[in-house]
Length: 375
Image 1 (cartoon, rainbow, N blue to C red):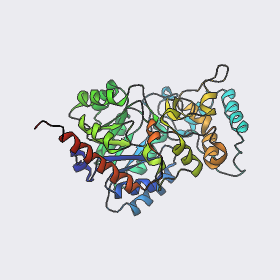
Image 2 (image 1 turned 30 degrees about the vertical axis):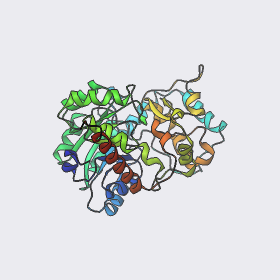
Image 3 (image 1 turned 90 degrees about the vertical axis):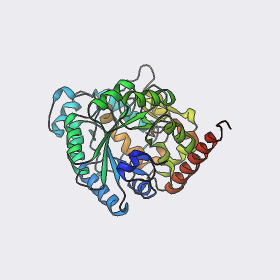
Image 4 (image 1 turned 45 degrees about the vertical axis):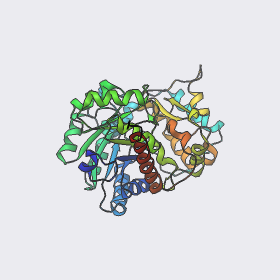
């Protein structure tokens, strides 16, 4: 199961795990995979705290950091601008009706407001180059961070240059062949191709169709397959098509080390693969999540339509905080991003057990295929 990318990064298995939980990052890397911390919701100071902790708990193993700099987003025309000034300008673009509608949905669902005095989340998060650049600078101060990924398309040239100058690999996600080719032409070292089944921000083309097209189009640039991978048989299929490894996310939401609130995790464990929907209702770009009253309300005629990124994320920042804090009461309107593979996630297991099962199932699948060869 060891690929050339394993050799370049010094890891045992080509199993990449995207997660917002530092415990999962450390556990995956310790178990031979490659943990990647998604930092879009963290301030630079919070990122420093998280990465310091991972450095102390990951041993000699490497890990990665995932940023979100969309190729296109509202406010790009403003150019280079101070993050606070950018947020103020973007706030002027948000209709009052959208904020009122979001607040109304939370109230109707019985989700309490945050206690007075609680720190409010930065509404802009890291959805722009201006806000993601400080996050990158913190990540590059940590030696064990060996890969930087961009979750939404080709990152700006200066970001790619900065990562390469630091001696690290730059990765980027895509959902179409031309996007993968743009990543390759921009000097991206590792292209992550995510099929329609995937959780979070995802496109419209299924993995079995998309993976081989992208692998052929960008060869010899290494490709990680994403979208719909939850076991060793699916991993074997991805590597059989020519992928250098797998990029997984949904899989780690229900592990014992996950930071998911118990009510949120139970929602995942109870869901079937038919219970997800691609919705723009929380971030402004199509994002696969569990469908609920929130996702349905933003689609109903007569209600406000979701704004573009990052405006919709600014509208829903308060909701993200409240549904996380009051998860027991908020599942009807919660932001629960996850892929169609959720139907395979039926029990809580440790990270190590998940990785070992993937490897064992992969070996069994390969042996089965070898056994199909004619005498």
